[in-house]
Length: 310
Image 1 (cartoon, rainbow, N blue to C red):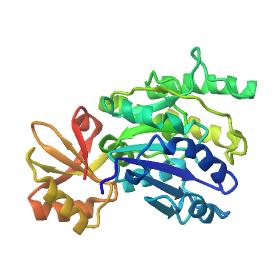
Image 2 (cartoon, rainbow, N blue to C red):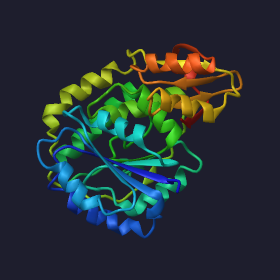
Image 3 (cartoon, helix red, strand yellow):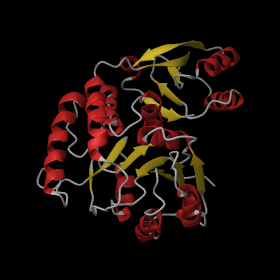
Image 4 (cartoon, rainbow, N blue to C red):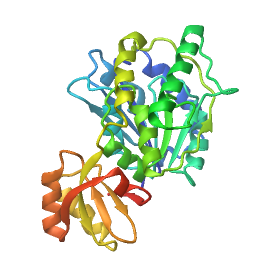
């Protein structure tokens, strides 16, 4: 049976919050076809028993996948891995605490019928109000920084629930470089550069306590990452084919080369199989097998194409 929706949950030291997050997710299960919905939990090198608890909490669902990173690489890295593994037509990335009410998941999926990206938005009257006034002020300042460096008009870039069509999600994951918490801003920067439309979906949320994130520890790194966005040379290895390349043959060649999480960016002129930055060797194998040309491609060349997961 094919999978319609993949729900990717990045988790780092979340053993204490997974069960409560699942209870919130229960409210959405009768709104989704769970036989065609997979849940992917990426344990980002936790030093508690997050992986065991994730199995206990989500393991009874019909379609699940649990992956543990050997070390803590960062939320951005965990999300990219989850997207690379996702089989669904659409992908929703959600925090382990499910602070964004999961009853909004069907609304996000509906928005993805016409838009490549459908992030949740907690904005009310142009602002996001947290329980802490200091955090509310800090959030407003961060938004101004994101808007300046990432060139995005999305107000709530840091919402912990985002929806993607799988093809564009794969491309954003392949291109992304930020492993930490500024990965959200990078997503919207890349979306702008690629010409992807973004349809924010208003959501209700709870400011759930107990996060392991210490804002003071990550703020300096986030600012550094934001300032580096426009200076970064986003190029990936690609294999160039004619626009009518056989998709099934591509998928078979990718499996044989043990390459995963790929995306085909097509136009009337050609089709570019986009690879991970360390995927040149696999790309060479695929190129030799199917008569393609291995090279690199920039954001400008990847802009405004059709994106298909391979």
